[in-house]
Each structure stands twice: as structure tokens, then as C-alpha cells.
Image 1: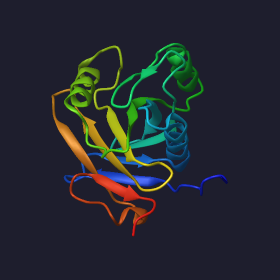
Image 2: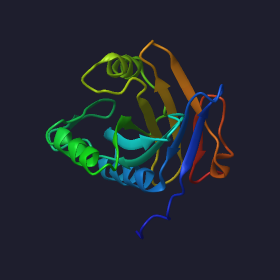
Image 3: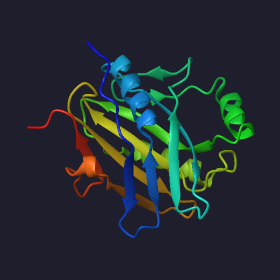
Image 4: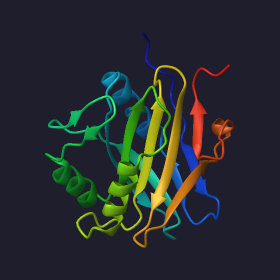
Length: 186
């Protein structure tokens, strides 16, 4: 099997335009490759990026893997943390980015967040440890070798949850749930 086609940046916006995200093509390519390797198991990691000078747009440039000590099943993931702080510190020191959220894979399923996903993101948004009052959650669902969908949302420190709709030209198949479909569509 050859190398997958290069993936373009994807843009997501909340209906009120308070939140906007650019998911960099390289970050999405990394996520899809990790999903391919995980096959039927969940995988995921953290999102590293930066904000625009007016703090309205989050630019996601890097998606990490789950970590060497991660544990996963078909419908669950416990992301590893070993070495993560060192990686985040290196990005911060080099002024290349910082923690902006989480991502994970729902193999063979839709990218709708579970109650546990929502609860964990609320916890991250209110935690002083993460220094991220508005973390982003990206979920990939389906088959990373064929048709897959993306879901993106932001959680705020005040408990609000904003679904982000795909707004790139490649996401013309976006529908109201905030998921965008890609790949082998008939």
C-alpha cells in the first residue's frame, strides 16, 4: 500500500463564530496514520498548537500518539503521560506551541463524543494543571483507510460546550452534528 495522499488543513468554526480551529494537514495525517496502526483499537493523544494574536483561532500543528504506556480496547483508551510534559516543555521553550486539547479514534464507529469524553474535557477545562481553559476535542470515527468522519468541539471553563462545524472546501459533506465525512463516499 502506498503512502496516503497529502491532507490539506481543515477549518472548523462554531455557529456563533466565537471559536475557530485550523487543524493542520500534517497533524491530521499523523492522527490518521496512528489510527491505521491501531486497527480496531482506540488510539489518541494530545493536540499541540498556538492561538492567533486575537485569541480567536486555535492553530493545531501537532498531534501526538497515545504514549508508550497507554492502554486501549475497542471502545476505550487510557492515554499515557510518560514524557508528555517534557515534550510540551520543549515546544513551549522553542515557542512552537503548547497544549490545546485532545484527540482520539472511534474505530468503525461515528465520531460522537461519549459521556466520558465530555466529562474528561470538562475536567481539563477547569483544571489548573492543564493551563487550557478552552480545550479542543477532535474525534475521528470510521475507517482511516476509507471513509472516516471528524468531530470537533471546544469546552470552556464555565461548562459550555461548542460544536465546531467543518468549514473548509474539502468538507462540503459536513452535516449539522459538527462531523465532516471524508474518504470513500459514493
